[in-house]
Length: 224
Image (cartoon, rainbow, N blue to C red; front, top):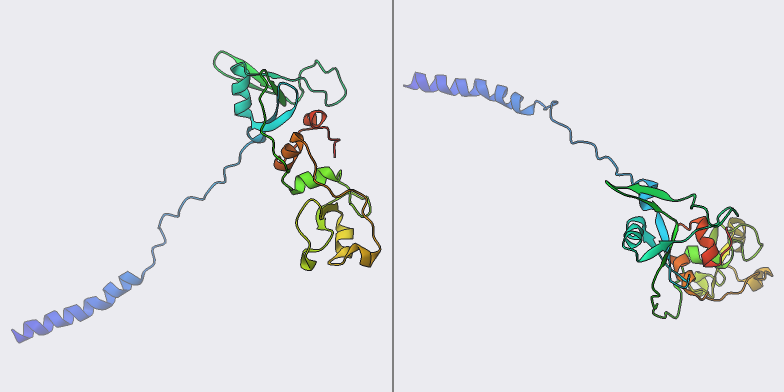
């Protein structure tokens, strides 16, 4: 009996290193997780369509799908655009044609409601970088060159507010030279009036990241 116990004990000691070695062997054949492929949305899917009221007042920029629904349901009509000075009755060169099983719809860049819609009055246009650039005509308020950024006339570090009355479009050179100083300290003068814009189309300019060239004739804005 004692001899049998010694044999079993020796067998356990002989198997221990082997089992430990097996546990320490890395598994090189493990399946790697699949790489995440970024979902790239085509540009035509992201495209938006300008919606005008029955009186040609700009209302908002709609997703293309919503614009197609309004056209198919007869609630809106396509508006011819004249981007390059050609015949205004020609087809919109930027239109996209969508096909279904039994029909095809050309999506214009501008549509108009058949029935007038009353728009709630809103007092102040929200200030965004895009709207500020449009207000200052994409020109530096200090030197008149092409604007690349925005600047606080009274620097934030000196109590200036982030408002229409204290922000201007600015080029990189003037922004660097001005730093946190006042205009009186530099002897500079503003080239534009610091006032909030008014009008429904300014809300569209403030919220739309991309403005189609054909929209500008309805927004009352020159091309940048």
